[in-house]
Length: 262
Image (tube, rainbow, N blue to C red; front, side):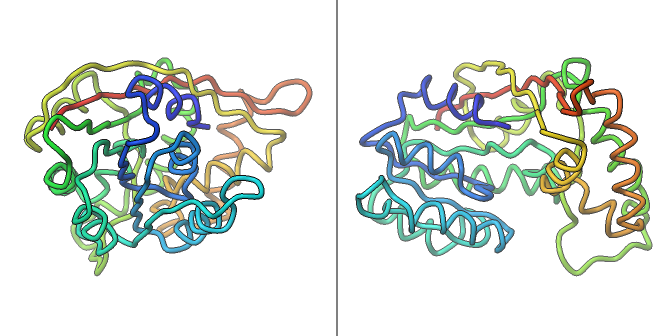
């Protein structure tokens, strides 16, 4: 669903041969695969081992048709991951991307997100680009109404008595006009342009829409404190206004990206 965002950023930064790209929260590796297809050398980290397994399939087993596997490094965690340190030791990164919406990047709080960005920037060459992305205005994102369901059901997670031994799951939150800039400044990053990209979420049917939204991880917190069946039921109800006569589900959205310089 975020392919238009990836394409817009890569085109603006002229990502290609000679680009050394680090993907924070790389997920299942689609954005990395697109950058590698343009000739970039890529490295990616994520906190979900299952998603990294999918990224490894995409990036180390396929390669170009009939050609060798794409050179890549993938690791669990963030900029402190050994794979990032190894890649940076060879040569500093020229581009760092944080394409996950702010709700995922800052799941442990804005302070943790700033620390992550600062650590990544320290491994980026002077003048290199760090790209942050987030949801656009809620009134221009049809999916925001559905994501609010997960946020509402996950409210018990905010209780002081709810102790966790691991960082809390990602939670959706709307992205304010200056939220990206407010993350960039304390991380030592200088804004150098921004843009908005239409990223509609489209699904073949209701079941695909529910499964697709659950795969974003933005309902994980709700499923931990609520019956998963209830979560699916409420997602379905919230999706009904977006289901068309042919059964497909269509939700127009806008994402915003901010390009910063180290």
